[in-house]
Length: 387
Ligand SMILES: *[C@@H]1O[C@H](CO)[C@@H](O)[C@H](O)[C@H]1NC(C)=O
Ligand SMILES: *[C@@H]1O[C@H](CO)[C@@H](O)[C@H](O)[C@H]1NC(C)=O
Ligand SMILES: *[C@@H]1O[C@H](CO)[C@@H](O)[C@H](O)[C@H]1NC(C)=O
Ligand SMILES: *[C@@H]1O[C@H](CO)[C@@H](O)[C@H](O)[C@H]1NC(C)=O
Ligand SMILES: *[C@@H]1O[C@H](CO)[C@@H](O)[C@H](O)[C@H]1NC(C)=O
Image (cartoon, protein in one colour):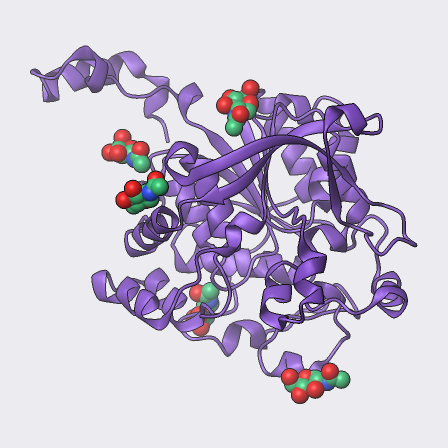
């Protein structure tokens, strides 16, 4: 996008085109005021709503990063490429593949944890490898992280295997480079495991503090009670797989000097679509993305990542209650709490922690409206982007 380089010309054009409008609302926004964002996620066929939200709110999406959380980073990155291709946005939004493995956690350590402490209702990438399940169109779990399961693309309605490729370089290197080039301007959105973010923090001492903040989907504090009351669905909803997949990376990220960190956890469980919601997406505007969501969005899972993205793009309208707390992450492998956060008040906390903003409640009606709008009216291609 070239117009911001000629602000004066556009100012003059603005006056010519809108002679009656005031100076304040006729001058274009400068590049530096356009928020910039990198979204890191374990992408799937409908997770693109998480990047439609910032696009609609005029963020410049510098790139997408893939991570290993529900499946391996290669497969989740291919989902990002497929979504962008269907949205006609491949030529302006690059995808960087993230780290295949978490820092320490492996299928073996994960499964040993379950043997010691009990099974988790949702196992993400560390569910046992099951080729029958993969052939049915499910993303790969365990086994070889470089394995690609094409059926997870080809068996889905209005979807397909991508014909475009990853950008050069790793997700962590990309994050470091983007933040160096735009100090203070780039927010990081993480809705999967924090492996790439932790690698970026360790690659460059100034990375975290030079971002514009970190937004995280994850950080449940009461999941054990949900598991204990035996309600499998509710236990599923609060299984903090993003953090458990990479506890050490979570700790690195949550103790790094980002200017601010926002955790959207339990409060993201509130917006669950029903079939009427999905039908309305297409009825209002039949487009490749509304069709894709109607065909593939489960009606039993909440819009977790989308709710976190909604908090990021319009916090004032979305957040009903938030608090500031210090949090630690349990990185002791022998602990039943391995990978969970532990909130503290300042007077009682151990050294080395920092404050995070913890979202307690969001306006579910507003979030649902925002999701509908961005799926019904997505950009038609790169030329449509305002960022
Ligand atoms: C995004 O920018 C366009 C063009 O300047 C503007 O019309 C629109 O209202 C903006 N959207 C939001 C959500 O701020
Ligand atoms: C593998 O997946 C199939 C299909 O979903 C399922 O029926 C079967 O129980 C799974 N096998 C194991 C060992 O979990
Ligand atoms: C890639 O191209 C093939 C062949 O034209 C098509 O079937 C598939 O849907 C395309 N993939 C995407 C993500 O659009
Ligand atoms: C986070 O910090 C950045 C940079 O100082 C600032 O622009 C942004 O408004 C802050 N966001 C929140 C939610 O506090
Ligand atoms: C929640 O959002 C809806 C729709 O935008 C609005 O009508 C309602 O007043 C909001 N509720 C609260 C408590 O802010």
